[in-house]
Image (cartoon, rainbow, N blue to C red; front, top):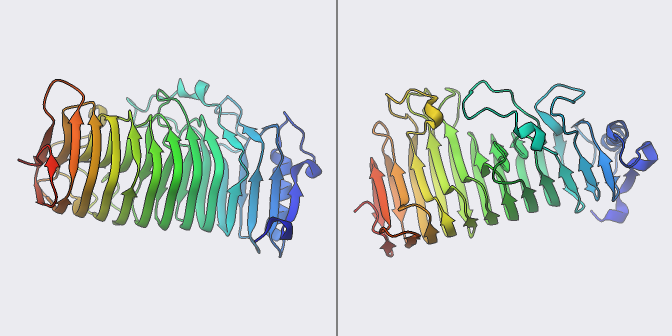
Length: 376
């Protein structure tokens, strides 16, 4: 729908002032938008705006555009939220949502990062997420930046037909648990033509997902693109149909990674994966299947993972690694990985040793050539 056919709801007409908390003005504009029978555009003009918190929910009667042209800033204090949740900006139960405008969502997270002890405390307090999208359908988030979130930058949960395009995420590599986009319990999700620089996973996938495409994404710094971790919740459901294509990983801890917990109750399957045309630039572990995932010894490793990985295509993976084990397939002895099809591999270790691979409990087939040889 063209912008001139939308009803424009400028937050300054609702009492918003630059460098002041705009939460009440934004909510008034949102309530008008969801009640409107015709398409609405909520306009946050250029300039600096303070937002304590926004919890916006539908259903809406017509499409809504959130046009963010300015710089939205969170309070530095992570506990200074009117509603004590794990979210700064929340949008729930909306169809035909567009978030755009070239502006920025600035979580101002550097003070909160000092409080994060999740690396040693599995019951650590959860800090606010910059943008939480739940039950969002037929929507697009494009030409906008999220910066320095206190925790994850974006959650996209229980949503259908959602596209992130020309989306920028920015946080320093030392910022803990600042995952770029976490996606779970949805289908037909796209992440396209985007730049993600963060201190944790660039993109992470939870359970109950299907038909996901990640294409033309630049990842780094960060931990790479991860499926999981999975296994701790017995109610977790299958993942099917994830493609990561034509992406570049620069200086990341990992490239593409699957991680499942040992001695965990879930028995889901992860299948129909495609990792193709990927460039690795000094990446720690370019391709990793880790079914013994147990960071900081926070689990019992005595029993194998019960999650099945199958029907995976890996092809045209090129570049350099900062560790000698450029490919690592550590699969479960209880549920071996099978139908793993490996095509062209050209990965070199940036050190004095030869490039190597690790393989446990994997049934693989090969086409094209591999350097180094896989599972030799």
